Image (cartoon, rainbow, N blue to C red; front, side, top):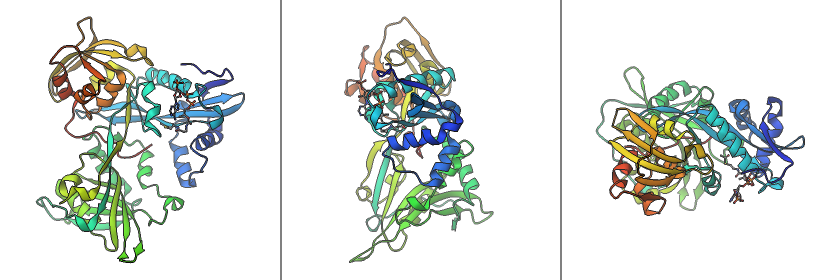
Amino acid sequence: MTIRHPELTVRPLRAEEWESWYRTIDVAFGGVEEAPEARALWRELTEVGRSLAVCEGGRTVGGAGAFSFRLAVPGGAVVPAAGVTMVGVLPTHRRRGALTALMRRQLDDVRAAGEPVAVLTASEPVIYGRFGYGPGSRKAVVSVLRGKVRVHTPERRGGLVLRLADPVAELARCEELYDRLAAGRPGTLVRRPGWEKLPVLDPPADRNGYSPLQCVLAEDPDGGELLGYARYAVKPEWNERGAAGVVRVRAVQAEQPWVYARLWEFLLDLDLTERVEAYNLPVDDALLHLVSDVRHLAPRIVDGLFVRLVDLPAALEARGYPVAVDVVLEVTDAFCPWNAGRWRLTAVPGGPVSCVRTGESAELELDVRELGAVYLGGGSLAALAAAGLVRELRPGALEPAAAAFRSGLEPWLPHGF
Ligand SMILES: CC(=O)SCCNC(=O)CCNC(=O)[C@H](O)C(C)(C)COP(=O)(O)OP(=O)(O)OC[C@H]1O[C@@H](n2cnc3c(N)ncnc32)[C@H](O)[C@@H]1OP(=O)(O)O
């Protein structure tokens, strides 16, 4: 767990070092410089006070950052969460324990700050399991052959006007809607000031032939209340059959099912396009149920947010459970041993939750990584048991516990960080 190269040290970043520190992370990711607009935003969002540098002599050779997020969890609560980010070590300094030392320092800092969980999106999922992170949410990637599907529109509940608008000019209204929806979907991050710029970040250098970001608003014809919005870009393409443009969907949000359906109907009905692609939808997104033939979405499931319980009892007490649970868990946690041991979790829906140390016989045995994997209500303890990752020590204990950890909606992270 220590740096295997004595010249390397981990220490907090100093504000004046940001440029060279960030360049080091760029180089760790391959060396391509980000567009200036993206770099400026990440500079603004970096929390220097919680960023770490790996140094050799006076030189930065690696680093890691953390954002102070608030994360929606099952039951509707929002918990403080460290958003681990900008992790990188120069190719000349790898496999000497620098990442391990960064993770050690960072998780100790997160614990001291009182954040019960840490979360991240992984460049490679293989990296973070050893540090106790489990895959807590997933996302669906779809590529729709739009000529092959129809959208079923649920019964309309009123009038609706679709209006094209400037995504930046309409940002505040769209963010209000996003905020209203956030707590209802575990895994969503409540956006702190400054983060609203991320979903409309659109550097010309990153467009790759796509149009500037476009925004369509769904408004109530009487009074103009915003009922939903979609952001997308279009790439015109032509082949021997004619127009074959591609629509890339970045966000679709609406509170009411019929408004959501109408927005997708719009996106799937743009002239001169052949395909509609979305790279990040909830795995239970309504679109999968709205289309006449789901096969023509070619849905693919990939990992989303990785979750690490840093303060196990505080984390488990912060979320809700849809059915009553009373279970004794034997937890292993090699990297954060303060979580290891036997815990009794008791909860009733909508009522108090308690997670305390106990000397009673353990009923389920698992690693903290598996608790991270089910913390947001996705996945299933039963499925993990089938993979041998959860062991049922008392026959009959698994199924009710698995049901208690589930959430109604699948967890989903709407944007990266
Ligand atoms: C949240 C985010 O920011 S994700 C971004 C992560 N960064 C990147 O992918 C950028 C490119 N990669 C890198 O910069 C580095 O290779 C890092 C940060 C992933 C790893 O840094 P290192 O200092 O080499 O890791 P460290 O030496 O501490 O390795 C710890 C263990 O993880 C293993 N490991 C580290 N990286 C990888 C990897 N990419 N694939 C497989 N195993 C890995 C090591 O083999 C080692 O295993 P061991 O304990 O059994 O010997």
